[in-house]
Image 1 (spheres, helix red, strand yellow):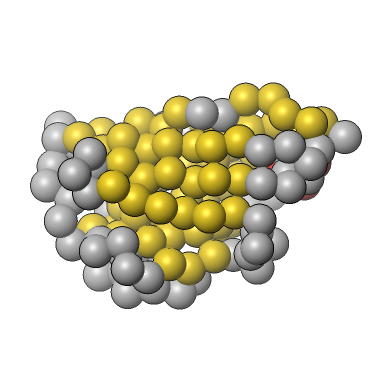
Image 2 (cartoon, rainbow, N blue to C red):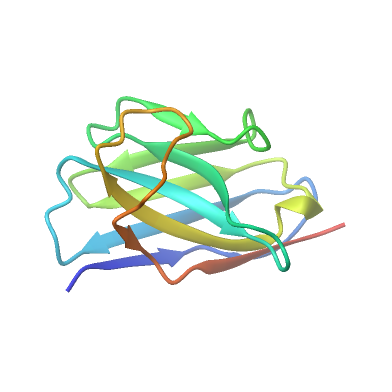
Length: 124
């Protein structure tokens, strides 16, 4: 059974930092790009960041460029999202996703697997 489990969400003040982690299990994730999306109440799901299977290329949504950094550890089957300079508008449920055939950039559509999400709340 494939599982993507997110952790690290919570409440932080504006300007602060959080680090999210996604642990993948139940599948060999070689050749899978890993990504993060977020969804705020009443809004559409938004692409945040992604990294290719060999962890050599990344992509970021415009709203997080320069503030968020995605990284991966293939040995541990984990992907992390370091979020700095957080803003109230970053408040959302953050989801981890896995997709075959991701080669970089901001097109991470049609993910094959999804996590359950972790809440991030940024207070002003």
